[in-house]
Picture 1 (tube, rainbow, N blue to C red):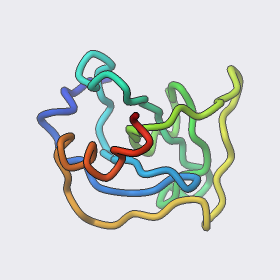
Picture 2 (tube, rainbow, N blue to C red):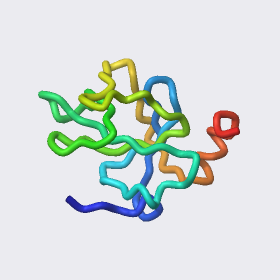
Picture 3 (tube, helix red, strand yellow):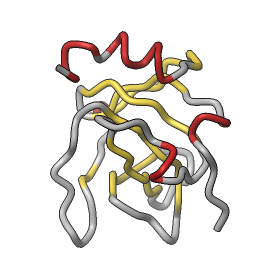
Length: 108
């Protein structure tokens, strides 16, 4: 399993459970995430084109990583289930500085 520095990969603007987030298909090192942000991994289900859960760590059926300004209450076993209306990908590639501007109010 390769881990990547979040500063060296494309981070796509998205939203999960009403929270602004950044998405990447790569596994990200915790050390490369700026303070005040949280990292979660996504798992896909029977259809590998859609995420089905948000988890702290995924070993099998890994879909990608999200970085959020808000911490989710993820159960120790399993994860937060996602439906089709629970997330959206916007296609914009953002830097952390640009993301901080979007999330400024939540981060204070």
